[in-house]
Length: 448
Image 1 (spheres, rainbow, N blue to C red):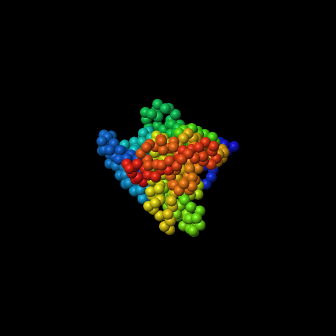
Image 2: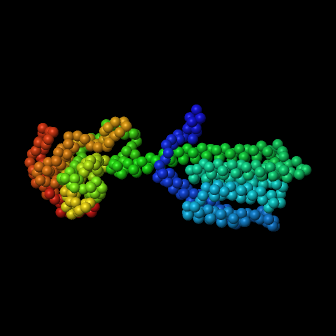
């Protein structure tokens, strides 16, 4: 029951232990918050100095003037705290101590008013300076740690109780406690109920802000966790797909997808099985990483999205996740660009990795398949299968880039291609007109 009440008041708790990198990200947010608090406090003390300087002095002639000294001390203390915040050397004990110093300095300043204005002690109980307490309490909410807010509010409540006690204790023979509100407002009489109201107000505001902080902190933890997960996710799937998942209005379900005309390209390294047999596992991993790093730059440059890695093979789509009206031409540009870089470069321990590409353009489905617990974002349909078959047919025809007639026609006539013929690819009964693409148009410049 208590867990349910706590969750209702403070929001759902973060059940699992947060990874170190997420705790570090939250800690960085706290550091930035403390720097912001330092600047706000410095701006406040500068404002108070300016206000005190230009305001008419109603206590002229009184030798005891504590306000300038208090402001000077608080200015120096604020500068020191801001400096330490930038240096990231603000220990917890120092922060808690500085919170108490803030409130203590304010209470001492309020206490000094009856001496400055030569009035009985209850005079300071009506000082509007007490309202600054709420500034100090609210400032601590910029940091997502309720401990400091709670400490500030508690110190303020205790400080005000001490001031009330001092005022009542120094009454002397004259009865300064009253229940008459008008007399309280127009004299130095003390209305205990009014002072209790002030203390209760301070405590209630503190409690409300602490609850808000706890809720915000839990929300922050979940938000940072989700953001970190999304960032990590973008390393395992295409950033465009990760962005699509994290920004979807509703949770993506199995079968969610769109039908559109797009271009699909399959890439595979020629004779990779033989190459992998000749390399040690660590060399093989290094070689593949270098290869994917170079090839992916070409693909991304031309607007392709790598939807899947499978061993040494890649599934690349154009005009699925992000709009691309020239998807067919960009796919051919990417394929020919890949041929250029794999011819020029060697990977790992000097290994050449010739790459075969099969490209097709047509109507397909781009979406999620799987179960409610496990989904993958991919493309499927007959047009996808054709692209996969064309990649394999390169081996039979001694080519490296094969594309269907639909792709060549949609890309424009400036590509240098030659017809291979009408082929019935494995798994289909309808024939497909296939072209070998050798070069790209002369005005295409690869900048990847």
